[in-house]
Image 1: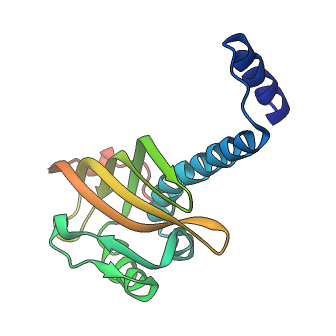
Image 2: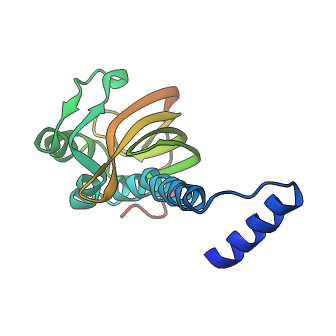
Image 3: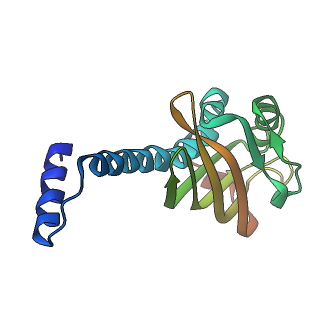
Length: 180
């Protein structure tokens, strides 16, 4: 659907109930919807970048002075690009041979140039040296975010992971079909 179609539909619905938004309200609503859509993509892009071990893609998601809070996992918060990069390269990416993450139920609340949000996640990590070969580490939980516009784009300014359930299980080697 085009924006013109959506605005025509919105205008018709507003007229049906006797409401006519001012032109600047329409632009404001349009900006709000655009911001929500842009921000909602960030958690999904994060999951793909982490699973692909793509450090530049991960870093592009975070604001320059972002806080990546992994206190739920016993790590100190990483603050700023250098610390976040180091955490991913020295810990997160090395912890698993491969991983598959799913992000769902992304919620976004935009307030001008700032926003907050949350999602549910399921993360499956395979062959973490800490647990040994032929193991799968399953974590389910939520991420909580703060977002900010930086250099004209929405970025994550704070991210907190809160696991709800975690387990490690062994599997027969033949069960692994693909682990890039």
